[in-house]
Image 1 (cartoon, rainbow, N blue to C red):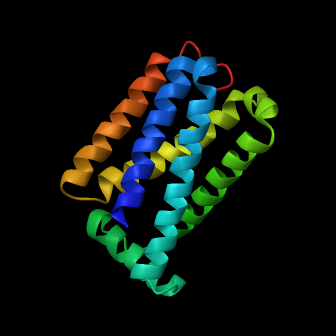
Image 2 (tube, one colour; image 1 turned 45 degrees about the vertical axis):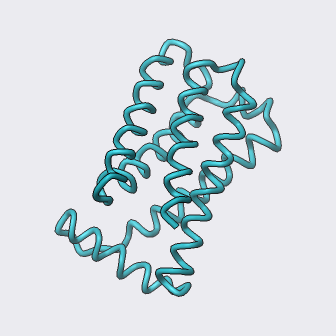
Image 3 (tube, one colour; image 1 turned 30 degrees about the vertical axis):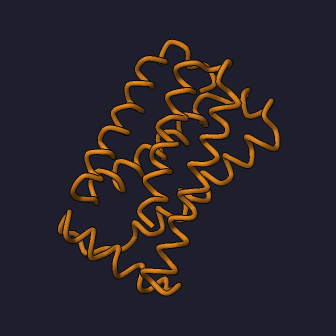
Length: 160
């Protein structure tokens, strides 16, 4: 199960690196990596529901609340809904990418920034804040790569 989210994290960071670093020349590679990252993230969520929660939303809520309380002191499982919204948003973004690449490339920069920022926010939380050990180091490296790519490509961002 951890392998799916780690692979998603790596594919996500690579996709953002290509997107902001090489734009037009790397569109196909970025599309494949972006799609793989989303699919792996969705697979991770499905595996978590199967293996950890026995397909119980209540069990997932309770575990999310316990993890949130351990890190922040707030006993609240609402972050689970943030995960649902994020997975739906990312899935819709991937669908748009493949169904209408021309319109995807022409979309407003705010839309692209919102999708990218939501992915970064979720990966910061899932791969840095709410994880321990070596996975946290990998998460921090991936987040640093993404932020560096954004900074490096800031002058190229038109419809990112």
